[in-house]
Image 1 (tube, one colour):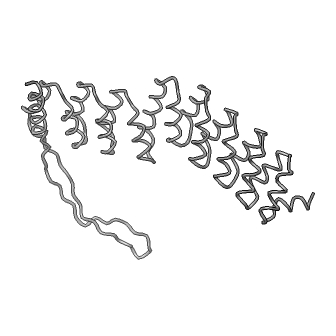
Image 2 (cartoon, rainbow, N blue to C red; image 1 turned 60 degrees about the horizontal axis):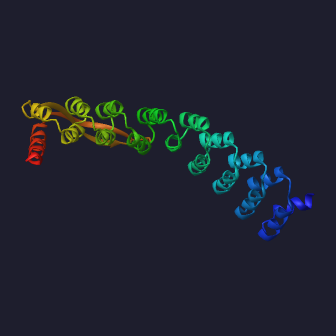
Image 3 (tube, rainbow, N blue to C red; image 1 turned 120 degrees about the horizontal axis):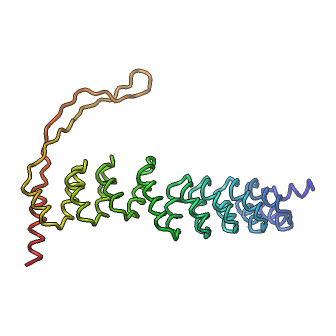
Length: 276
C-alpha cells in the first residue's frame, strides 16, 4: 500500500494518473483531490468520485479553487450546495453552487444568510416569492457597506418606490442615490425626493423626471436654496515613525446656491412643447 500511495503522489503525471485510475475508495480519491500537487491528477480524482460526502469534502476543503468547482459540478445534495453557497471561500465556487440550487426553501435560506452579497442577489433572482426577493435586495442596499457595486446591483433590482425613495433621499453615497432616482416612477415620490433629498445632484435628477406641471411650477416659483460647503487644505504628515496621517492646514466654509428653478423651468417647457 505504501508503494501505491507513493504512485499517486508522484510528480510524474502519467504515473500518478495511472494510480488514481485504479483507486475506488472515495476517501482516498478525496485525499488525492485535496493533497496531490498536480491539478490534472486532482481533477481526475474528482471525476472518479461519486460519493456525495466525499465530493462535499473536496468542494469545501480542496486548496485549489478550480478543483472545488469540479466537485461542485458533481454535487446534487441541495443542503450541501446551500452550505457551499453560504460559506464557500471563493465567489466563483459559491456561484457554481447557486446555479445548482432548485429547492425554494433552501434558496430562501441562502438568500437570507449567505456571507457574500453577490450570492444573495443571484439566489433572490431564482426565488418564486419575489416579495421576499425584494426584501433581500432592500437589506443588501441598506446594510452592506463593504461592496459598493453589490449594493448598486441590489438597488437596480428594487421596485418598491418607498424603499427607493428612502435610499435616494438619505444614502450617503451619491452614486447610490442617483441609481435609486433612476428607478423611481411614482410622481409623488419623485416630488418628495426633489424637495427633500440630501444629495443636490440627485435632487436635480429627480426634477428632470417630474411630469406633474403643478409640482414643477411650485419649484419654478420657489426660492433658491442656500447651503454651506466646507473646503479644506491638507498635508501628509509622516510624524517621524512611518505612519502617515492627514493634517489639516486650513479649512473655509462658503455659502453656495442650489437652484433647481432653472431645471424645473426647462422640464416644464419641454413637457408643454410635447403637448402642442
